[in-house]
Length: 426
Ligand SMILES: Nc1ncnc2c1ncn2[C@@H]1O[C@H](COP(=O)(O)OP(=O)(O)O)[C@@H](O)[C@H]1O
Ligand SMILES: [Mg+2]
Image (cartoon, rainbow, N blue to C red):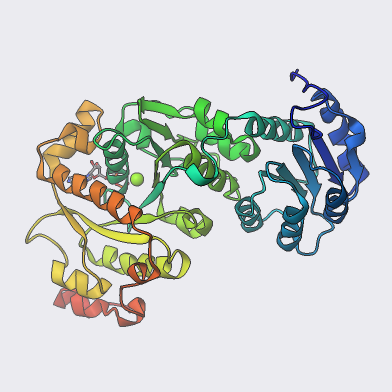
């Protein structure tokens, strides 16, 4: 099925070697290795320690598969491996620990992929083909000339505040006005509107990614993403609502990683519950746009989300965007809102019903459909602001400039209308 590699590779290294702890896994691996045109004898019994020993005295292969099952401290041992492994080797780790945190850390330490035991032929084949692609791909995007990338998550304090409107509009602006290759990842897997807002079909891309995280690579991205225009690609789903989301989040982390290579901008429409379930999603995010309305409930949740960000994603720059603002008609005044969240609102977008209707009717993003509206002008400012704050190195000082103990200082009663205050629970 796969074109076998020529026996002697041009750099004089072996194309492949594996160190695997158990026979069952070796039995799955060997036939696939033969299929790839490599020597099955290169699949040795052993683990990470044997790999380190062996590589300290022989040349590194192009692709190395190594079993972490018997390693007490995989991350530390991987570093030992890195010391004896020559640069350019693509390493695939195998293990039995199903933990997205470990997965992330391994990727961060330079591992190409992590396969969970028990191995299956198709999983191994996909990983090896993926590794081969990386190995044979031109190296232009690597190392010193890696492209600058800004990843922005848009989170709404509550449903309906306009997070998706902002996410699609920002992605649109990055891609068109700023001409930056942009990926829009809609993580509202069941009810997402990212594709709908652009009058596109979501396709199966995101669903496939969730089902088969090990397949996610540059090629997958190219095939699975829906193109809105030359610079804007979307990954979203309309998953059946009788199918609960079954994932440990590794697919999302892997997607973010691939976007970083393939695009200049990533925009993630990130529902609140995803933030709670997969906090790792924010590990590589540079800017968090927090969309809110000036209501009591939104104030409470803005406080909680800002405080969460401070603890869990201190590197990300938060931008607070009040949307649907109607002067004189807010539950909470701007001053009170800012006092309760203990920071300034960065941008205010006016309520504009006509613009919202117009966008829906045209099947265009809010900004695209309403170029001369005030609301769109503010969103253009936000896009510029994101590019600005993502460009600065997110200094911890900037990220944590808001005052301490947000929750402790929040006095719900004080900003509630008098008659409701009596019933308030704090
Ligand atoms: N500034 C605005 N003025 C009027 N309507 C808006 C505004 N922003 C968003 N909307 C509308 O509010 C509704 C909810 O927006 P949406 O972006 O789907 O919210 P969320 O993703 O936060 O649930 C949509 O119908 C959208 O068109
Ligand atoms: Mg939404």
